[in-house]
Length: 390
Image (cartoon, rainbow, N blue to C red):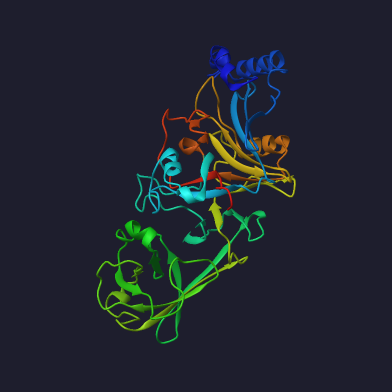
């Protein structure tokens, strides 16, 4: 049964709601019986270029599910993370993020919302909650949540990545280093040009860093180390970064003076050196073909959901609408994991859900965002068709 026919169920399902739970369960059982054949997932519809789409409705939820599938063997197709503010950390709709994809990367064909993030109602809005690597540039540090990345051989992965970011001061001492995020405790935080808007919100003493006379410089890439010199002034110039020192004592005694050198290192476990694409999210839903236990907050509450999955032949971009009585209730994470497993995913990761849940295909939004409009988000994941010869 396609999603377009889901409205025929709205009156019946909505009447089953309310405090009379036995009646609600009976109504759902009856609907499941009456529509058991219609609820079976329909075939994928080919849209060309190795991409197909499917839209399912299941009255047992009720659920409205949208899937974009594309062939992994198509070497001219690539997944590219996007930023909410185009080329900077910030907020923007998925449609705006797609429009900001540089033409040299290719033509956007499909997209889904990305990682959890700080919303417009929070400080440091647009800060992704987890790992973010865009075209090889490290923009956000990983957390203890699972994330997604594509290794240098083109193989996709899900797992927890641990950061060991450090700054080495002129006296040889080292300290923990954050990246484009709100400073906490006494840890220094580095703000790159892409995170400059976030850096302006940070409290603490500031050191402006510039490139040494030689050696590698921007952009920051995972697994690399960078030498920098503390600038003599805070003039805004290109290819400079800001190091914020939030600790109270450092406001009176800086560990580095103008003209002195510091070293910045960005190691991770596992190593992500050379990785071009990575995106936070989590938790993992399926690993090695096995459904994973649900341990995240609100795992067992139904919400709109987004997910990325794959098997040996295909990638899958999946959304489940929610918070829309009679149309779709949303899924718990166990329900989502089970559905992705039936879809054929051997690996799958949860992405941000709720009002961020959005799936885009060839210029149109194919699901129904629960707010009735596109929410501004910090990241997206866009499928592009590379130009010929790339």
